[in-house]
Image 1 (spheres, rainbow, N blue to C red):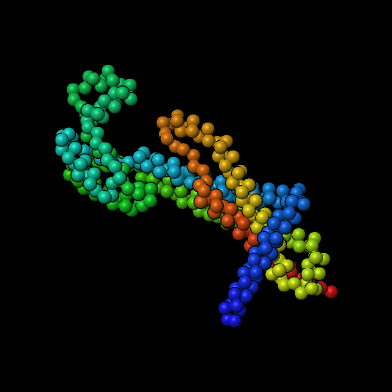
Image 2 (spheres, rainbow, N blue to C red):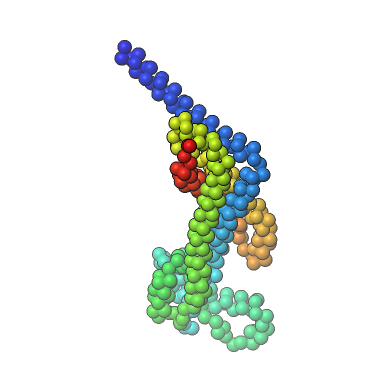
Length: 320
């Protein structure tokens, strides 16, 4: 008897769970069908939401590409150690090998006097005039790229001070002002993306909430009848929440399409500009994880806006 009772209880739970899933599935797809019955209104709402979400996404992807570009430009922010005139090439090479073992240095390059003069002759246009010089006035140079140079000004100052203390070094050259400006620009851009994202997130929430409010007003008689027969607020608001979910989900997908199309339009000119500067810069697109995150955030914001409106409006509707 006990085994039979347990079996019936288990079957009953399965039936309840199955009915629960069917109920939610019906609400999910019936809300999508209701949206399709008002194509113009639904399309306009989704378009407005898509534009808002795509603006936030565009700001994000622009900053991501700029950060990639600054990563590629780190080599142009290298330190140059100009050695004293009496330091010969062998001593300078040993010094460069010792510095290469420093944990704070990303990469190092030694440029001898001869290499520097050959490069200067090739690029300056004064090759014949330079041949008249009795000797080579250029010093040996060690070019250093510090680690994390764009992240910590204090570490850069400390490293530069250590190099200046070396007896073999005449002076150290680094474009500190360029580093400060780049750091400030990236901080402003990152905070700007956050602020714009928050503002546009509020816009998505309010637009969806207003759409659901209008939908609730149009179906007020249906809501009143549901309340009269004893339906709970959770049961009444379920299809409206699913409507908000579909609005956010479709708008998120449309925003991804807008962002991708815009990137495809500018990709060719960007690659051409990159080739003119002999750079291997490639435009970044939204990754799969970022695409999923975009859909989730758009859907959650839309559901949140729908729930906030329903939580208030359903309490204002009272059966007579």
